[in-house]
Length: 384
Image (cartoon, rainbow, N blue to C red; front, side, top):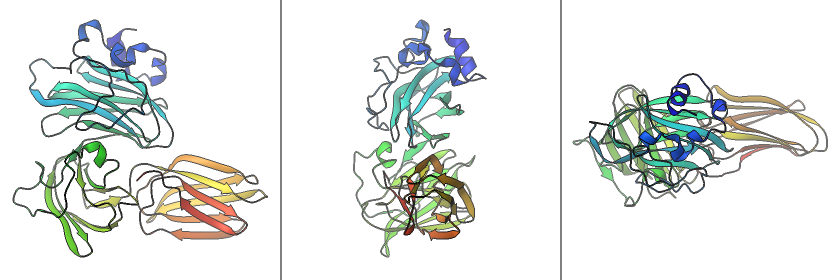
């Protein structure tokens, strides 16, 4: 298979299915001999942004140098790409990085549920690069990646759709903090905390600016009436600012202000490690991006018709009728967007049950169980 026609086709019209079985898109085999010194293969080694990716098979180690574009300024350290699978099923995908018509990197791999495929140390020079990620089910998204000092690796979330994120860790004194603004940090931040931890096991607030311009954001975190964190930030366009908050076993009142308004949220990190807030306009909190599976269980000895509706505010997130045999269980993967606290309506045999959850649900499948004693709705927690 010729490399350049493949690259043009992948960024153009063909789907991933046409590349099946082609070794040209796996690891270091994705480069021509002329590019071999510039285009690295996927590796499991870490970087300051990199998680441990031993659970994401399909990436071969490489000793090749990061790509250097002619005449472009060198970065303080090479930049890479990380792909998080936030869904409950494994995903096969192809990742391509290009400098104009020149293929810098390409790899196809399977990412397990909750896993991360990391491709660190791909680019040694600043500039604009094209990134394309295509999944086996046909979701193909392209992103123009402006690589520069001050912004680290590119992260791709599978939610299940493909979305690109530029996370920056900011414990209060990063380059995006307003120099003469209020500064309060009433806790210690681990010295080895990195972006991967702030997006996973460590409690953190994620401020997402999806606007086309920088946004001034004020963040206050209160704990039992005491100011725990305070800072102002100028959040660049297309950046996710990560603010770690410790300890995790507390309950916090989070206040986010932008020029367009204010939002307040009662946050429990033990339920949801990461609390997200959009700051591109009036601030708005959301519980996460990992969609919930919906599992409906008929725990009776007769057939049941069960209608399940899930809402947040006035928005309907999910609605479906299930025709279940006795003791049958049906699961719909990645069915409910965790956009906010949920309201449930469950109807069966003419009876309607309603549930109203005032806070974010834990990450994990939503279980609707119908028994002879009634209806029970719960979430089986997996990870926060």
